[in-house]
Length: 123
Image (cartoon, rainbow, N blue to C red):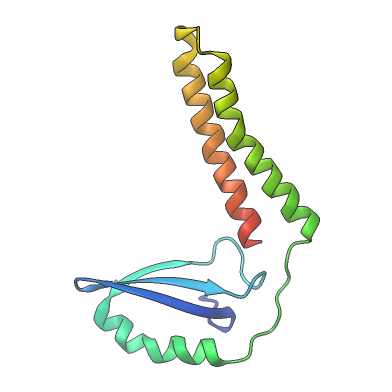
């Protein structure tokens, strides 16, 4: 089910015959799985635009937001994972054999860090 009652804003860019829609929801009213980016034919967006506008103008109910402490912990953990890659790089500057392993490890930590930051932002 599409969470229209929680919709707060729709930003649209038309690219050729497609409309790229960036959806914003009330904080805490939808989960991390709610669609935030839609790509639809421009004609379909023109027909759906009044529905989006009505949803934005309608009053919304406050949703559940994650406790601040939980979001701060997710944020700090994500930043920590992102910061570890340069530290590992600095420690293995002289050992060329470990560079590939450290690069792979850093990439995995970076991706995980970005996922934690996203979850902290949307929860």
